[in-house]
Image (cartoon, rainbow, N blue to C red; front, side, top):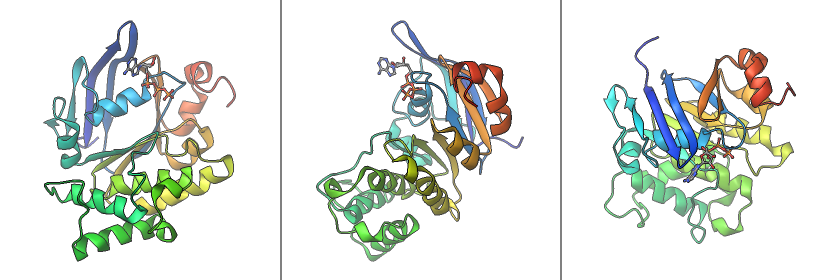
Length: 249
Ligand SMILES: Nc1ncnc2c1ncn2[C@@H]1O[C@H](COP(=O)(O)OP(=O)(O)OP(=O)(O)O)[C@@H](O)[C@H]1O
């Protein structure tokens, strides 16, 4: 494999007696679309939090293009090209969808105050382009508090993409989205990424989404990686059947 974009080496994290990460070693090459699966409490969000700087590992190293980012703040890590969305979208509810995006564009321009939306023509153009990419134009001037959960999810992901990240981590992009809307939501997300040079890792519980939208699957159980391969191989793995999919696949 070429030098990985991201390399997690021996990551460990405990919360009291709970082992949330137990010697996690993962290399991610640029351009890959990969998913992370695992039952509740397996350590998926802990991994995302450590890679994005929201949580510091007790041990181990995280390298981005061979630079050690383990001890950097989440703001610095975002500035270096690793961005994320959240299980519960982090949006300003009083602001409109467009204003939220302008805040994200402002952050990507390293402006002094994040809370003052970027108002340059170029920033507006970027925000509008993101609304279009995610087919959210109809919501541009609606306050976020009036928007449905699925729309908020898409907006949160669009905001993460505003920074033109090298690596984008999506924490359960379809959670809270109705069963009928899961596929269309993922299609919109992946469609929006198509002409962006971005590597995507998403955490997902829905195995159909995993099988259809990722080329590599990493399965977590009890803070450990128990499988890391193609979707078909991971779904057929006995440990994955025992501890993740419950033998349903
Ligand atoms: N801040 C924290 N304080 C204490 N325990 C935590 C904390 N964050 C996570 N944990 C524990 O660490 C373990 C892994 O949690 P994590 O959120 O990473 O799991 P997950 O795989 O993302 O689960 P889910 O699918 O439910 O989101 C769980 O047992 C969880 O309760």
